[in-house]
Amino acid sequence: MPKMKSNSGAKKRFQTTASGKLKRKKAYHSHILTKKSPKRKRSLRETTLVSSVDEPRMKKLIGS
Image 1 (tube, rainbow, N blue to C red):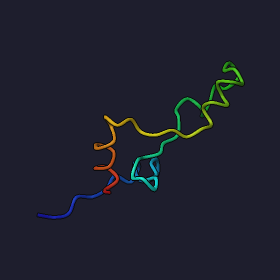
Image 2: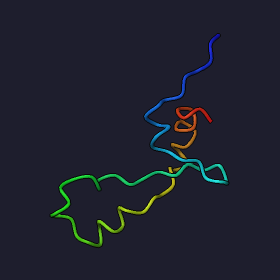
Image 3: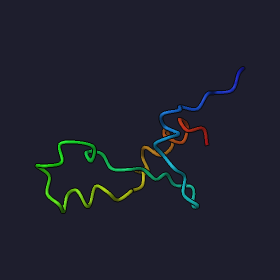
Image 4: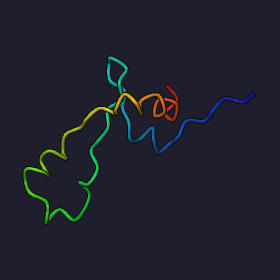
């Protein structure tokens, strides 16, 4: 049976931390920023971790 291919889009979007968790960027920070408050935009700049429920699925996609 051939090897599974990793998902190229997922590889670009997720980064593995030293402890093995997945880091991701927050959504809604790409356009229509005029109506969003500065506080909200500032919070969207930060990275966050993938939820523990979704982590196994995402790891399968990136092939780690």
